[in-house]
Length: 281
Image (cartoon, rainbow, N blue to C red):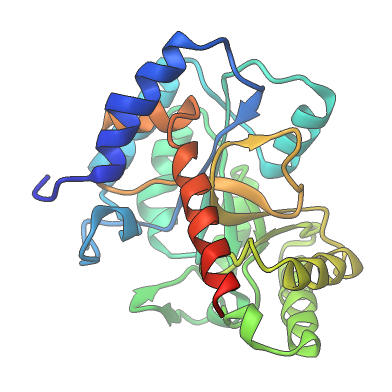
């Protein structure tokens, strides 16, 4: 790893040792956020912002989960377990944004090998009967979505066009939510009740969050995930569950720390920074 990762150093050498000295914290379930699983790695300047995981790294990460007794659950299952208190520290939710074809090619075989399920969030304008691409990577086609569904994969909405929702009118947001949900349900024959927020989630914009939450409920969604960094807990909003970003640069030590909540501090820092920015806007 060529860059010094401040987030990794703080997590492993400050937060994690402190957590080991303190009483056990509140029950939580880590929700992992992946995007592409491919050897064509992205070139983001810092490891934190990379969204691609090589097949070899992904297999190592799933093997680590398997060897440590983790059981995969959907975000809906995570919400139910958190609300009922049925959390044993070994549940994990594995999610993929953007509906890339390499999920079928590289991720699903590994998931099946270790007995895991996953939830894939589809930007439906890029999912068709003919192959389309999003951000330079090929996406799934509907026949592949149905094939994966039969193999235990769950699908949720990632809007239709993957817009910056905070920058568009409420009517456009409504159309994005309803249109993507209908497309998935028409193509799979199953309810699509989970939603993944595209781009960075504006968690400090309370007015926008309230509007979006109302629109999600109106459209028929019961749970959702976003980019807020943390493990999901009982007091997490079921429609805006936090997740843990994972990519090719997550070695065993960092992944293990993320799973136990030692990476949640970063979400707190990000929230404080965003709040200060809003004050001066």
